[in-house]
Image (cartoon, rainbow, N blue to C red; front, side, top):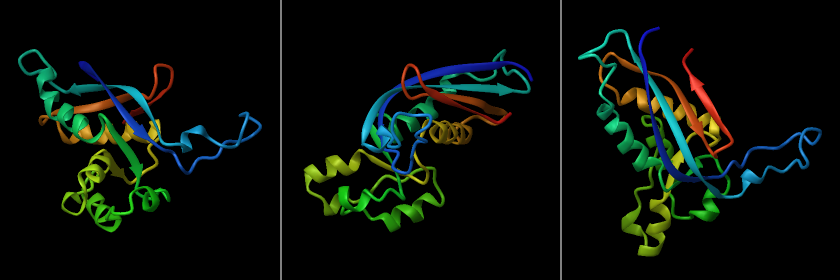
Length: 177
């Protein structure tokens, strides 16, 4: 354990948690309202550490620029959809799900690349969808961000914890501890 720095990021995203059922004895219904396509204003905080300081720093905060670019590209003002969501064929009939599944094997996300086959209006819809291979819950998103930021840091610097706030009052934490 040594020096830890943190940085906070904000944005907006949409999602749908299609595979969740509630236990009636703990909730007023067995149906989760998150099964509807909806959006949130999010906050995420990433915590970084290093075994030694370079120029008196764990790293310069500017080194989080690549992560910020990633976050803007794949999450901010995007809708995260689980590749297994049964709504996809109805909502996105021209989505090449098989291609997205293959792409997800080597990446953290897949953005539909179908512009040539779409009208301008259809492209607006497809361009805002990001396929992921998990249910886009706060818990899974915090782990996803953790994995992403760790691929985008200078050598010797590691992310140790990610806080992901789906709303001002609810979120999840993922840590390697």
